[in-house]
Length: 170
Image (tube, rainbow, N blue to C red; front, side, top):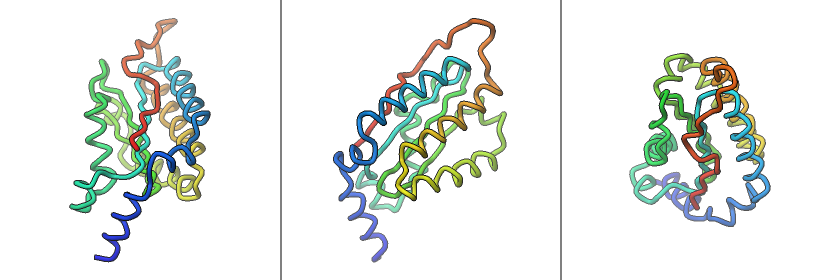
């Protein structure tokens, strides 16, 4: 019960100011530019979502960050790309957790253990409070996989099916 209450308070305490301290506007702009640059080399779509804390309904039932990330994967329409190769990079600031939710096209190309290893490695920067660095590393890792499995053919531009803006939920 104590840890559940502590988590509830932590998630209610983290707000928009906390997000702005962790990722100021300039950091969000750099991440957005990194997404745009990445998508010039592959047909995949990357969305970055940063959430201050989970909604009460998730906290009440003790839901993990992964459950929320999967819900946002659908809500932000990352699943709805032409080649089924969208990736959501989700940061839950209150828990310093990162989740990678990958659409079925790319997921078939990369073993599940590879994704789990990536998340473990990226979590180190986040737990140390290096949020921009952790998200930038996540973007670079996802970019490398998308370039490997979904390179653009010739001079064909990426259709950019999703916005490159970092989605912030405070």
